[in-house]
Figure (cartoon, rainbow over the protein chains, first blue to last red):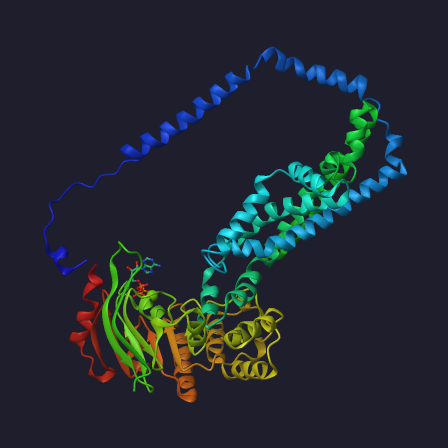
Length: 282
Length: 250
Ligand SMILES: Nc1ncnc2c1ncn2[C@@H]1O[C@H](COP(=O)(O)OP(=O)(O)OP(=O)(O)O)[C@@H](O)[C@H]1O
Ligand SMILES: [Mg+2]
């Protein structure tokens, strides 16, 4: 911008504006069309028979009524089953705690704005979190069961991996959204990266992290009920056995238990997070 | 010998973008309270932030306390930064932290990593923080959260934090633009008094020319990344002002 520009008389052109500028709009709508075509093609590929889809619901109802009813509620009180429920809760708490503790430093590395080092720690953090997320919790279970054998330890490790992926992503999103002004002020005092993290980042994300941790435990508990199905310990084992032995009414009882417990965990975590939200505004 | 010597300083924010600072030369003496004035977008903030390398210059040299700032590695840069106090337009406090912790964070450059993780500051630091808080008139607010204070009070916390560093140079980026005129004057006087008391040279961006002439002994005028004026406050004429702010019509 020099004073020359200011003095050069420009030919007066009427200002123009359009909501649909030519190349962008074309690209955007073509992409949308492409997605729709792909969806239509996928549905066609499924070979969906509308009659069968609609017929499935009454049939499901009928099967539930005569095979799974009445649920064998007495089984719920079985000593060993109750123990496995307790184990499931323990697994979810351990996996959640380890996962969250490991996720915090990894999320720090994986946050572009405050990472320890942009070319070493940043990709390391990103890849670790991505790797944990990319592999489903049941596959983690199968992997750990293969390596260290059946039981809770494998389950806890699988849940830990799952929680690192789950919480790590949410943590680093939270860190990348912080106000950078205080961070800059701390850097200007000569503070190192760890000090900047402890003084500039943690106070800003502390409450959000607690909320995310509770949410992570909630999701880990849901995952924990399934982990046992693949030999990772906990109540999932009884679900697997009952399923394979075709004890349908027992399966129904176990499923009801899972639904009840997951609902409770959801209510509890929802309540805790709501209380936190109040604190967050304060 | 000047405390700070800047030669042919050039900055661009990205390789293809425009040059924001286009070859600046100036120096700051140990006794200076030097104002940098200029219209919005002239590059005042960019200049101040180059001095402690919050922004990396793309050319030129900065010599501070006799050391070449641009040659320092990360570790030496941190050691240098702790000698430079900085005060910001928007205070840049950690809102969810207490006033005390905000002030103590000025000592981080001198505190070991492990100690600081557990917020174990040496006793002298805590005493010094209390002393400074009393000096800026915040003795009653030590344990309050930073966001419970008014703008003027927050800037006083910012001042105390900068002085905690026992700085050898103060950089101020429009320290009073977010405050009303009366409080602005109070804050500027406080900074001037403290700078004299601790014998620290000051380089200060300022929007308000009135304030600049009132509090500073020297003025540097910037326009579009180029120095248009540099001299004692008394020597600045109306014509100089008009030249510096000529771009304002845009
Ligand atoms: N982080 C950045 N990335 C790209 N361009 C930037 C950045 N910061 C500032 N600029 C540009 O540099 C120029 C100078 O900005 P600077 O903030 O230094 O001006 P200033 O003199 O401090 O203005 P003000 O009085 O409004 O604070 C502006 O044109 C601005 O758009
Ligand atoms: Mg500015």
